[in-house]
Length: 80
Image (tube, rainbow, N blue to C red; front, side, top):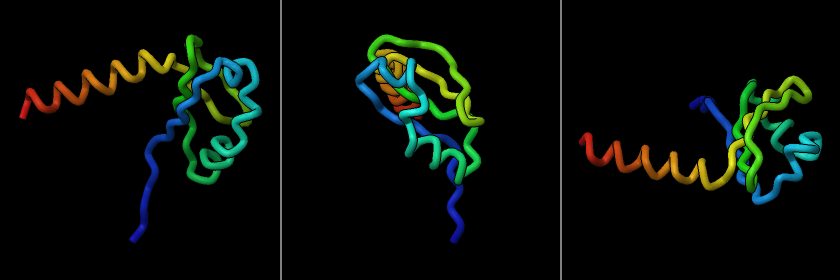
């Protein structure tokens, strides 16, 4: 059985990685090995996109990401 990874998410409670994406070594390696070009990384307050090591990081505040996951979960339950 072959598994395919479609996306990657790294939860962080720090804005440090927005300024220093090179410190996301494990995520960079995972993305390169699995051909993932746009992982999501949460932060405390930073939002934006940064390109490093052929990986296009999408940074979102953890609160925004948690809201989105919660809303999508409720929408799926309501629409069943």
